[in-house]
Image (cartoon, rainbow, N blue to C red):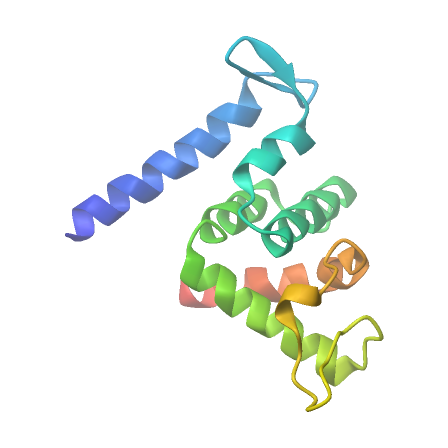
Length: 140
């Protein structure tokens, strides 16, 4: 059973690597069409949170704050629904305790996850991505 999981992970990593590695100008060729990295990201992302975490990680990589290998590991880990939910819980908890203003809450003080505008919180996610990467490296 473990072998199957390793093969699946390796296949996903290879797909992510191949989709961006064929071109030097940052575009990937899919089905003969030239697509920009953001379009590939839209296909890869399964939620607004997922898309914006990857977008923040790409920005950090462009600034030289994280390595390409860390970016790749994060992209692979974010494909896991369990990891993605844990990362989103971490982000929401950090937003609440840091006093972020864009956190939608109901009258009972419960955060409305579906109402969070992750696009507006891209700067916050850029600060959170290194923490998520540290968690990945600790737990492997």
